[in-house]
Length: 273
View (cartoon, rainbow, N blue to C red):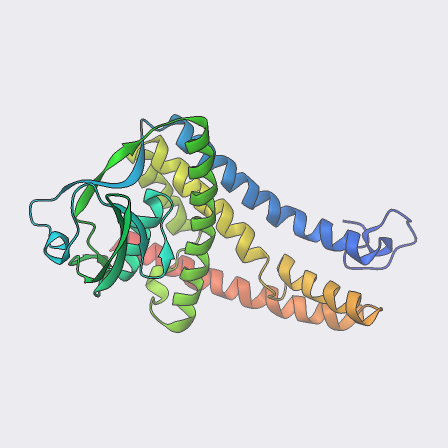
């Protein structure tokens, strides 16, 4: 935009807008991505044949969790210290934390019951261990209230999953093999499309939200990096010298492009193997 990286005499140029207006404009693209992700979740739930409840209907043949107190008819309301308002939360918490014994809070005969150190067993996918969800749940009534409830909670969970994934990458829980660039994402989208419209919509919503959240991180060259400098301007009452801000963003772009090349090279090698 005019006045984004340079001074301008045009009164409508970005550089001549108040700092709070520039912050709104800078954040608008990322927020649009997040809103798009939420709309895709809503559509996915609308077209789904059924939505899952958090009430256990039956256990798998080799299920181990019944040995630790879980019963059919139990409504799972928390896994560890995380509430589970919808089925997606149950699946995510058990998958993420069920590799080790975990406390499960259920609603049984109208009373809350805490089952300590429940085990689920472990499944491994692409070298990553997950807790094994060894039961099935009843369907939830598909009405307007439940559709809105599931859209809201599934969207909030998606945002949390993205933050957790970023944290796992930084902590070293997942390596670079877990990161994909355009080539890897295109391959995954193709696989999701073959699996059905719901899988494609779910993956698309995650990608949209991931783009929005990642772009809001306070990193050079990203929208979040520009917001960071605008926040400094808001606090100190005057902008950072454009020359220095431009240098920071330039270094950020170079590093991001280098990372893109490395990840794309890795994705191509994976396709050829």
